[in-house]
Image (cartoon, rainbow, N blue to C red; front, side):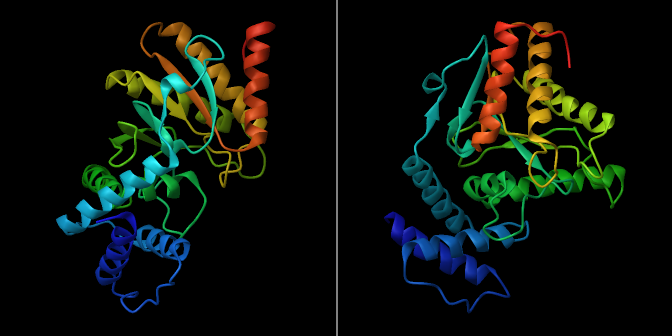
Amino acid sequence: MNQNERLDYLIEAFKEDSVEYKNLKVPVDTDGKKRILRSLMNIRMPREMNTEVLKIQDEYLREAINEKGIVNLFNIDMVEDSISIWQGDITRLKVDAIVNAANSQMLGCFIPMHTCIDNCIHTFAGVELRNECNKKMNRLKIRYGRDYEQPTAIPMLTDAYNLPAKKIVHIVGPIVQGGLSKRNGEDLKNCYKNTLDLCVENGLRSVAFCCISTGVFHFPNKRAAEIAVATVREWLKENQGKIDRIIFNVFKDEDKKYYERELWIKKNVGYSGQ
């Protein structure tokens, strides 16, 4: 079965799996079909899926990742000891862990074709990821109550399924409302520290951070970069030899500029704190 055949098969399988979209009209062009499949995956509630469908889905997604191009650590330069900046799609990175900017429900983004990193990671990992997240959240709800939501800065570790990375760290960043507060800054700092601690606990020696909270959570991009770099540098000094590589993964040119500026300042001028 080639990619086009897998795409057609999966669209029909996910339509059949859906109650509302069983009779959905499918476009004839490949890009249109890809959008339909991604949308059907995005809106699907967490539950088990037929094993044959999962097998074809996994083959399709792994080939899609290969087509995008897998990026290994040796393809990424270090700007200083153990720290790198890389601009691009985080789902291409073959590292021990990538960081997902999650929401407190921890089930991924349900908006079809949304451009957030949560949507992208869940799409290309496959529907098994949402199912695992749901099982973990259900166990937490049994322990803490049915209304439990994941607190800010408390990371959750899952498999990465069809992504090149080994694991995904899902973390809820601070939401900025009515102006940046000191608490927002402390929460963002803890997102980085707690994620790195979790990586060490699980033997993960390379991690790629997205720009946590800078999207729909409205954390100012420049200040977020300042906190991220300062926190990571402080953590590395206190935990020498525990992690080999920390990557700041950026997508926007704006964020790349901020991270480059912060790392250049700290490397060439010195820095006394946040």
